[in-house]
Image (cartoon, rainbow, N blue to C red; front, side, top):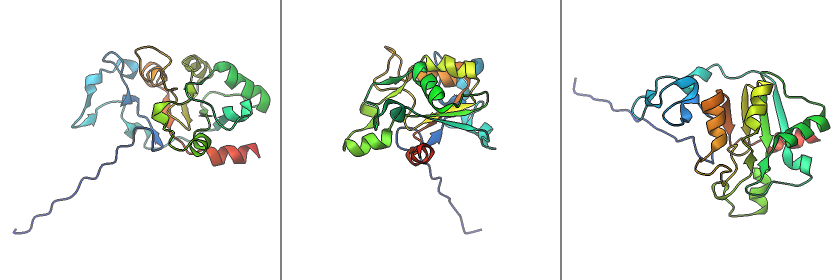
Length: 195
């Protein structure tokens, strides 16, 4: 016929430091390899990921969540740039609360990002933030956590590993197959849990 229709294809980039999102296992590769030895070439800019894509999470995650509020543990409103949360911090939180991270848990680690943004107008996460020490990756594996999330992007900025940007992402996504939730707005949850 005479009529033709053309539809839009809206896109919204979810990665970065602004939006809450869940990383697919195809989000990061190291030296040409994704999780479980899948070649990084399985990700194509036109077609997306043929393996390890986010569609695997279509049914969502239903499990226990464990909130670990590091600023509350340290008696401060937020952590400073470059501060690395350690295994000792996580275990101190467990002792303080009596809650132990167990297999299948989603672990949410707070650094106080929202409080820091209010206290320091103009501060940007990408220019310096607290995050997790890479040693926490082994701890998560030993505890068999299902996923990890937090109010930032897990990795401290600047990176703790010379020449490797976001080493915690590499360890979690590429080496261990642990999905990451980035940029969660969990301050209200932390306040309610701490009340």
